[in-house]
Length: 72
Image 1 (cartoon, rainbow, N blue to C red):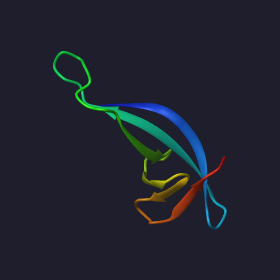
Image 2 (cartoon, rainbow, N blue to C red):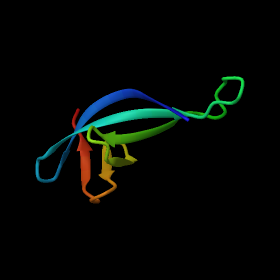
Image 3 (cartoon, rainbow, N blue to C red):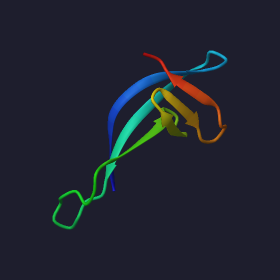
């Protein structure tokens, strides 16, 4: 599985803290080098913590459960 950084953005929690978020696309390669499936988009904080996408501009920090909103 190969993960490629495709985007970066900032998000803010209810208390005003800013979080740098990295967006990755992961794809599984077959033996001949072609993609086996559609890429899967995953999100992580810059420090490596996992982030779930809740929909639109809403995200949740997996470790703490804190909801963050993407800053336009």
